[in-house]
Image (cartoon, rainbow, N blue to C red; front, side, top):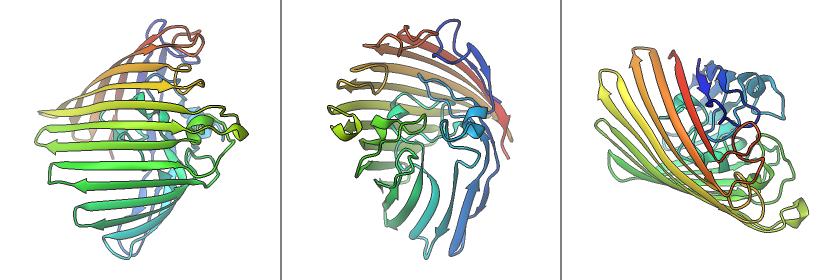
Length: 324
């Protein structure tokens, strides 16, 4: 049960200064072996994104198609003829990005500002193939969960050794989609996305720098009158202090270009830092998140604060629960 503090007057339009919520109350049902496998993850949840309005658990889980992904955000059927090749179809977590949708999957409770340009879930099919140190994935899906199956996503991971790997993602809309909802932003859902991620895991350290680029081509038929770009970079880190104590952190920046809004107004950008101390005792855990965002070139009404006029945001989160 996490608690979010947006600060006295520095929240986001539509959010309260203090907001308790349930980030993950989900059931995991799976068969992970054999030729026919499956995975299902029904339940209640909320997805926090730094620098953005938080959609409550009630809105995310039961708010309908105009909000997030409903009570069954992800689940699929998988056919695995061998350990090196498989195919899955259903409601999938996206291939793209270094941070996952749910808070328990990440170093920090909130997803970062760079992932504002990336999808979280999609519907479609995905093939995975591994040969030696190289793992490949190809997905045909509906992008930002738009319901229009015109996205192609590709991923390649090369494992250098037991500590280091590189991953490259490339994805994009092969057609055009007019859908515009909370979970399917018009501009991002008609974009091309490229990510490069390096992962280092050794001893008490996890270090993961990554780069993300988004290009939205001109498409006058759906109202995109000129092309847009977003470039971002982030460094994620986690250090085990021993005795169940951990210290996580994230440093990131994103900038945009073009005459339409991809962030806090046309041509806006933002810098953010997050620090997350955590403690785990057996199945019990508690995390404290401390985050600060500073935006530039903010358009009035699209920034922070009750009226969207502030150019900075401070957030404090307390995330506690039981792992089953």
